[in-house]
Image (cartoon, rainbow, N blue to C red; front, side, top):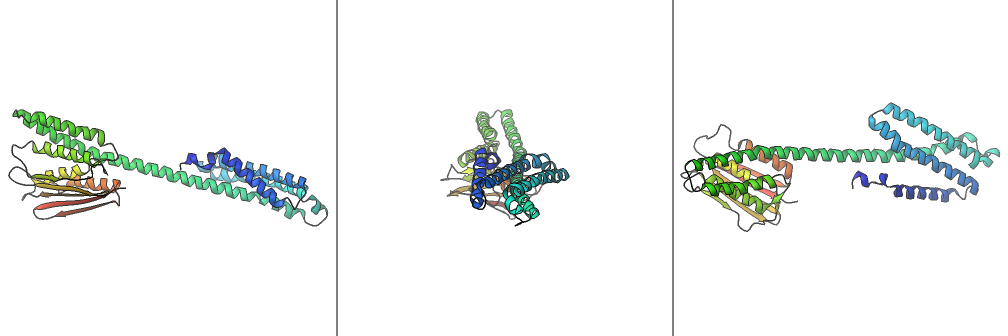
Length: 340
């Protein structure tokens, strides 16, 4: 329920609440006083209660407390409380208990104080409700800010990755066009499909697993096309649940990382991956070779893998298991993604 749906903004709820309060308290005391005395007390108490409640709710807190003007809040609130306190005390002593006071059965001061102090109940209720609503709205704002922060960070991480894909693909197409390869038109079409997924799907919170698989296939095809001979690339994804939701451009980054560090070429290196699903759980495994020499200045995994880990923490939090292993000749990643 949002703040706009809370009873504070529902006049009918207020009307029903005050009516119920009036009838209940009248029922309790009506047998103790004459009808006229009872009605005078009840109407006066109701009016002063309503004034105190809405004064606290719509004037005192918004004008002073929420603006951190605490001294003015308590000073002005105290003055209004004392005025209404005196009004209630006068009514009680002069209309409700007047006969008992005149007869000397009870003293005026305790009656005066008792009539006024009942106003504290309304002050406590109004203050308590208002403080609860302020805390509720604060939590809503914090949650909204946290979500915006998460989305901004997620988009930043995606923005770091997408240009790298495009840069590599364009270099490959350029290389093929220079030698007049007949693969160039096919590669441009594949790049077009890949970019369509990047542009229209990457901004979504989730995409279908089948669409992500197609994007991976386009990416691996783009990468392999720059070589004249086949590469040892394998991606097994038979019988997957294609309609499962997944964070866009997530798995493909493991492929990008594997290609970058495997040293793969027609003579050496490999990238082997598999994907399967069980119920709403996605199991992903990818392994790539490691060359005998260091191909890059950064360590295996590098910034790309760090970005993936950050995205997993943001999108899946405790609903994922990531296992990374490195041997002398291979780098292995195992990932489990659990649906919502």
